[in-house]
Length: 275
Image 1 (cartoon, rainbow, N blue to C red):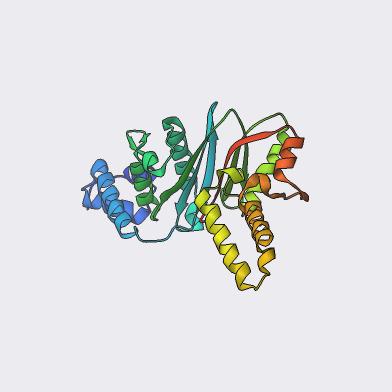
Image 2: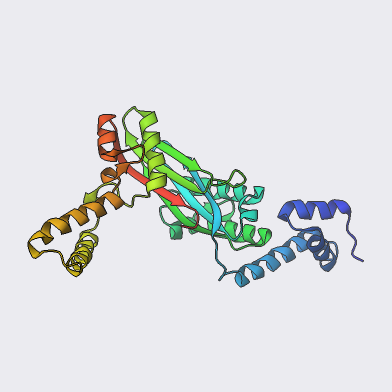
């Protein structure tokens, strides 16, 4: 029997968050050496990570941190809601988020290479995945520049961390209206700020599709141009924030609501876990 104390066992469990049996077995295998037992458990976790690489991650959290010149939002994904609501996973989200806010990373690739403690964000996530026993991945990151921000985080369940997050960068003084617009974004899921931001090829492809649909419906040739333009306009209302019908009053557009309130939106981002 290896020589180790209950204090050693407690220290190992608190250090890595591992179970009683795994911690005890590691200490036995390490001959009571606490540091070696820690290394054994980390290596075991790393091997488990590799086996979990093809698993799906449909749960997780959205987290946001604001600075003077930009706001950073992430989606950190895991396999189960059990892990998603755990204290260790939520803390990991906070640590990853702060590291990325400090680094200024704007892509997942850059984010994983960003410094976090003595390693990188990528190694931090891998180490915590080994402890928590699930595949964990940084799925998305957005860094929105600006000076004024409205942040809306929504919980789909009171037991879970936020599952939907919206950040809006804006100019103006009507905080209540801009928060309402952030809530609208969480519901309506616009892809662009304005129709001018939609890539030309995307618009032309939509125009081609609605023309084929309209011709297939046997619409009169003379009426086709007006019908096609009407359907393209409907597409703009679906994907461009300023063109969308306002969720609180569908008789006005979001663009008009902002103008009437003296607000200008310079950028936004919306994340929903698993979407």
